[in-house]
Length: 109
Image (cartoon, rainbow, N blue to C red):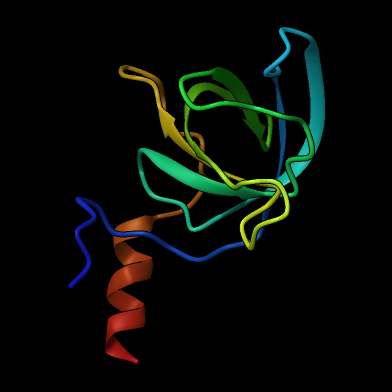
């Protein structure tokens, strides 16, 4: 059984991510948002070294919001270059997707 609190939708959405990496150096790059929910997402293609607890900015379709890195795929492992992010409290949802409708449609087959 899935323990997630919200519905999620598999997607491939191009995003821009920026902030400070694990060494305190500024970075900016393109990535792909996958498996999005109202409060978070999994990003793929993140080459910068990040660590959990780091705040990053994400831009999608001209909309920006602050997120917290909650997990980072280990270098050399299956989830390398992937991170999990959570929308910081009070931030606007930036995904241009009606998540509830997507999940309802998928459930109908």
